Image 1 (cartoon, one colour):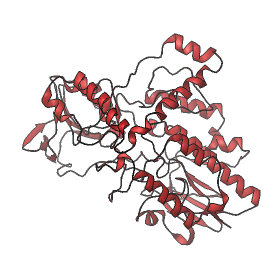
Image 2: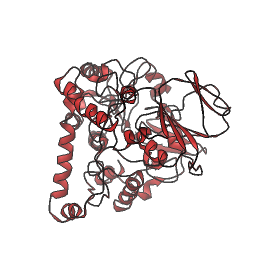
Image 3: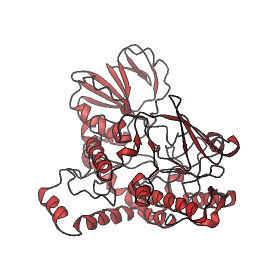
Image 4: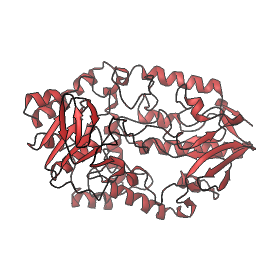
Length: 463
């Protein structure tokens, strides 16, 4: 966003970052094996292509280093205020007033939330959690002082983080228990080092790097039809992960436990080359009985007790919970948390009525199940810059989506979502407690980019 604003000629830019360094989720998550499940050359900015990714799917550390290089390359470090945690934003006197946790105040004409949707750990409330005598931590709060060598360790959860953590722990622990609530669809990742000859071509041949990125983009886009409920693509799409499961897991009982009972894509499709290989080890045990409680020495699940030395929560995040740590007040003191209590939503995924000059990156219904979210963020930054340009061109004080435009937009989004596999009845982090899908975009990334190509000024109320 800062790079886009600089390109548009803005100089009065401030980024308030609660941590002492950049990196977002790649700073927060440092667990063993952390990496991206989107190809490296696609999970990068279109204006800052990188021919030197070391692996097909980059590690968190390598992505974080890339972010730092972009900060330096585009000279935006001067705008970043590290160690500044904002806890209140209020629209007052035709502008935004921000307060940080140290009592300092800041003002702005426009406010952009770039807090993301996956940064507050979700730790389930399990009885007896305070009684367990061993180490307990969440995957996003990894205890690097803990040495798993020779220990009995439990991983609670079997989704995106777990499929990366489990193979790493399996190589070190004396015994590893994996507590699975729901089986997941898993496809092979095809990870590996990027060959030297390939780096040479991408670095030296004109247009090769951009062409390769577009190839990855369109390959990802081609998978979207599989997310249509009841489609032939969805039924045929099951064959690949089922073949992969059969190839990797010869034991029929374990294979049944690992076979999902819901349509492909209803929950996030996972990618891993070594998760199944870890589960078939003699010193790794999959537990599908529900966890009942903890005690001093371990975990009670079903009718059994599992004695462990440490418990790792790989239980994901409180998705899009951007209002729990930050109080956001719009016109007349209306709280964003109160408005969203009846359902989380945003006009064109970016703005909310009643909150003038307030924009969101990775806002409601802008996540994807098939392509790179970097593509979505770039479309959003272009849209925000277009809104700010309109404010200046027309000498408006503020703009916000009209209630009628917001309602029309929400109706279109949720009508389209009704045709997707995400409505197939499974429970996932895509939905709120009422079953409303507030996270995912129901079309292709290409359609999203076109829809946010430029703001439609007739959709706004202006002052």
